[in-house]
Image (tube, rainbow over all chains, first blue to last red):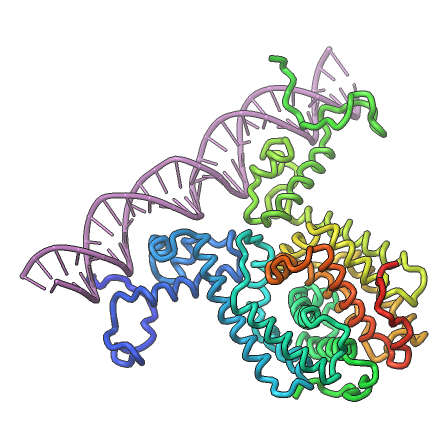
Length: 239
Length: 239
DNA sequence: GTTGTAATTGGCCGATCGGCCAGTTAATAT
DNA sequence: ATATTAACTGGCCGATCGGCCAATTACAAC
């Protein structure tokens, strides 16, 4: 047999089609780190951190177990890094969502629907966050991204409140909290809900039905009484 | 040393003060089962099922590990029984809550506040439910209690809708879903919220502030526009 | 009293866990 | 070309995992 050492599988392209790098480097610590983080994230999301063994992670990443300790030190540090990377991307995406809505008028509706659609198409996000909630990480320090996100949202809500589009007697922070809760809790208990209704409707349609009523309740709840009739009409909450 | 065999610790009383039973039975399979379920529930809630070893459970229950297999068969079956017992009590308590509100008028406010206070005083419930959400139990069959609970709530909401106290364009099931989501998600992310606000207010007061706004948003959201001003005035949402 | 049944114990098993270490190899600096 | 560093490998460790089994013991039925 040839003596080619079993480096990472899936070299992802022929040896002469790299984008930025020059050589097909047979040793690539960054790629190894990435492969390990990817594998760990997937397994942690699916099974949870404590049910996932380092052997599984190493196997899926295509490297030996020792490399985990070499790059991350321990399983707990790996879990920490996976969380940090995930939240970094997660909050970055959220930030883009908030800023994407140009008018403060439909800010809440847009945010609500966009977040709902995001969780709908990224069920692994719900699972991952659920694991982080379950695992009591004592040394939880809120990331800069998270703080930025809330401050950004609070600022925009204050604008809307000043314009009279949102009830001024509500604390912006709590408005955001309820806004996040409604889609997240729905998908967190999605399987149970489907089992409860037992196939009376297909999942996709059920999601849309819930979205409609949820948006109705939330928007109607945070809007001042005098403009309550403005956007009424039922219709499609999207677009 | 005396030859007294190390039976379950904490005999809970002097040998002549039993309530129903006659003898201080040195063998009590039901008590053993209960002790194991109690120990397992506490450890599972704290650490999660897969991070909890049977040795821990047995030690906390004051029996040997073998008894777990004798009474439950396997770790997974133990976890299943713990869940079943927990949900049984949980939904039973919820059912009592719903039925306790005699008037359909303040049904939603009462249910919302009562559920919020329940989770506030039973943080272990939030943790336990979070673990069950994270662990994908493939063979999840909704309990009779759960179905009853929803049917009961839906029926009462329909009454209120007929009386015009609740918007009739909303699906009762979704109203319940949002009602449950708002308190649960708050306490599920309680630690993160506290870390985010970083001691600007004490937890208890923060909870009350959130409760007030959350009740406002939800009730205002589900009430018809013409009676929106009825219960207004801010004040204490309790009682 | 005898017998049967089931609760209970301690010990043991193979498998697997996270972690460590000596040694090998590739990239880099000099 | 040589030395140095770090990525990487295979193998091994003690501990612990869930589970099993033979033996003992308490209780109930007869």
